[in-house]
Image 1 (tube, rainbow, N blue to C red):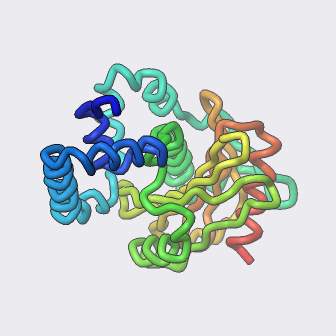
Image 2: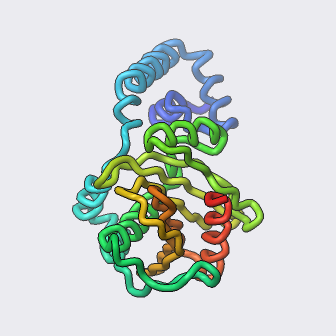
Length: 251
C-alpha cells in the first residue's frame, strides 16, 4: 500500500474524506500504530475545540461584521461590490396586494431589502457551510429561530415551485436577531428568506420589490414581522416564490 500522506490523515480526522478514501486510511492506520495514535490525538483535539467554541459559533453573526470583513477581503471583491451596491431602484406591488409605498416607516422600507440582499449575497455562495442548521433538523431549526426572535416562525414550503429547504441560520441585525432560511433548486439555484422583528405594527401587508446587481428582493411587513425573499433568478419566478411565501405565512 502506498504511504498515506499527512494531509490525508488530517482530512480523515476532520471527517472530510469520501468512503473509498476513508477505507484506504483506515487500512493504513491498522498497520501503522504511530499514525493511528496521532489521528486519535487530532480527533480528540477537534472534539475539545467543538466543546469550547461551538457555543460562540452559534451566536448570531452581526451583519456589520460581515460588511467589514467582505469590504477588506480582496477575494470577495465581486460579492462585496454586489452587496454594498444594493439599492432600492424601483418599488412595485404585486398584483392583488396593492401598489405604492407606505411612508410611515421609510427606514424599514429602505433598510430591510438592503440587509436581506446583503445576507443573501454573503451566504448563498457557500458550499460547505451555507447554513448553521440543515433541513434534516428543520423542526429544531424553526423552534430555535422562533425562540431567538420571540415569535412563531414558519419555513415556507417551496416544493411546488421546485425549491427545497437547505436549512437556516441566525444573524444579528441592527435592531436584534434575524432569521435566514435558505432554499435550493435541483439546478443549484438558491433563494433566501430573511425574517426580522419590526419596531411596531404598521398594518401594511403589501408586497414591495427592489432589485440591484441581479438580486431580486420581494419584501413585506405583516404586523410586527418583516419578511424579504431574495434570489438571483428571474423576476417572474421570484414573484411566484414570494407569492407562495406570503400565502403560507399569512394564512
